[in-house]
Length: 254
Image (cartoon, rainbow, N blue to C red; front, side, top):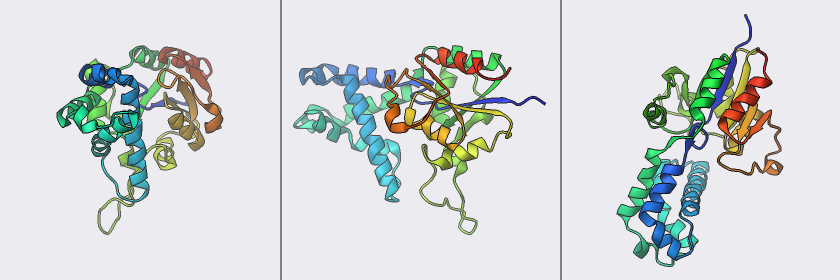
């Protein structure tokens, strides 16, 4: 039997764009932010990145707090750091919550459907690996009418060790880019199979390559790969999702 070809995708940021979230911020706070020379998209990015940073720092100190809770909490701090001297006068809790709700309205990136069709047409099995809530993340595909079988949708939570005596989770969980998130995924496939990981986050795909995947990176989100800090060679790099699929197909065995 010929080796199978598997491609594992990151979802949020790669297959799914943050544009709806950025647009929501522009609609609600955009004119006021611009009065202070703050670009709404840049504020949205900074808010999101600040939440990621605090989430991971809290996690490292073994005080797990849901990302959405952290995201909500750092809103006013991010406004202050952006140059708003009195952030609670600038925006309300209701406006904060409405901006955050934009994160639930994310949509597939242009070219995502074409990319998946190219890969499946060439005999690839498509998988998704997410740290996020599976129901929410699967919903992005369902809203777009793009088939993604539930059995091919993997959450890092599935790799968490359970204490046999207490039945509770060991440690603080499994999250990308921990090797514990990628190594069990690799074990789902036969040794001789083609095993690829694709993302628009260099931190994500470079970690997957370290774990043993072949790597495909798309610049559609970050633009700059910053290879000098990740020190990882990618098998494929492309500016669009369909181009990334074409390059992967071209360098793998039929």
